[in-house]
Amino acid sequence: MSKEPVSKIINEYFEKLRRQLSVDYNCTPDDLIAEENIITVSKLNEGRRSYSPGKPFLQMVTLGRNTVIMADECLHGFLRGFVRDTEGHRLFEFDSLTRLNEELKKYGYKINPTHHMFLPWRNAAPEERFRVKWLYDSEIDRFYGDERFPNAIAFPVPCPVRPDRIVCMAVDGDNIMGMAGCSEDAPHWQQIGIDVLPEYRSKGIGSYLVSLLKNKIIGNGDVPFYGTAAANIPSQNIAVSCGFRPAWTETEAVKIEDEI
Image 1 (spheres, one colour):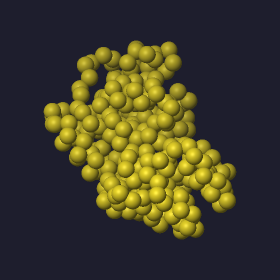
Image 2 (cartoon, rainbow, N blue to C red):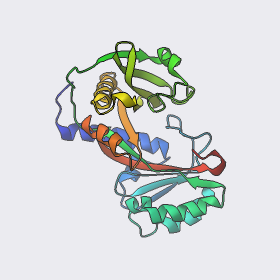
Image 3 (tube, one colour):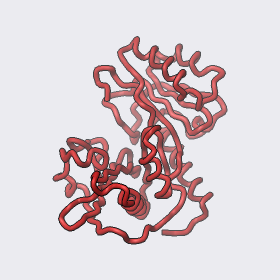
Image 4 (cartoon, rainbow, N blue to C red):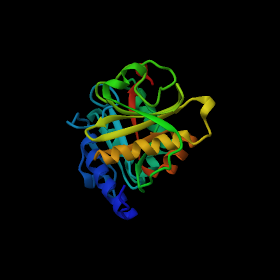
């Protein structure tokens, strides 16, 4: 991989991120770095990432400065008061999310857990440590429904709107030690997931596979990204060790009967 300056890598991915999020949140790239919080109308724009069926009732995102909220117009009156005189990142704090959740419950929705998202910031080629196998597209099909890999690939069945594209497995003879996979959540945006079997953990397999897959995605001209929960420290450590850094935080409303 090329040894580009860190600042150039960060800036390139940041610009790509703003363009993608502007599609996801029906806003402009500049809205995502504005001083004030932004509220937009919910819309299914072509090329957006989609994690719930149908038009979103509410989604909110911050890159650390302001917050952009895309929501059904029935919420806009409440949201204008909700965001007023509040720093964008503070809208993701517990008290703010609790207040938002109470409003959503009136419409049969609840707030989903926040997703903490990472983008590459440095290039690193790991030393060869484990034997690996690569699978692509339909070659992955045989693993759907395999309870060992709920994070690396769609579980339990393929997801048509976010197809799995590449899998990298670490193997010990005929045994699979771990699997990293990526799904194409939007055109050329590949989200990485990782599963390491319990008996093979703490050996560096997760970091090794994620690094290999990240480099493969970049080599293909696509954008690798990584998401995890706020308290999943082991997963965050894998991301950081593989050359990712925190880039944005987002959440969405889901129907209470569809809670996931």
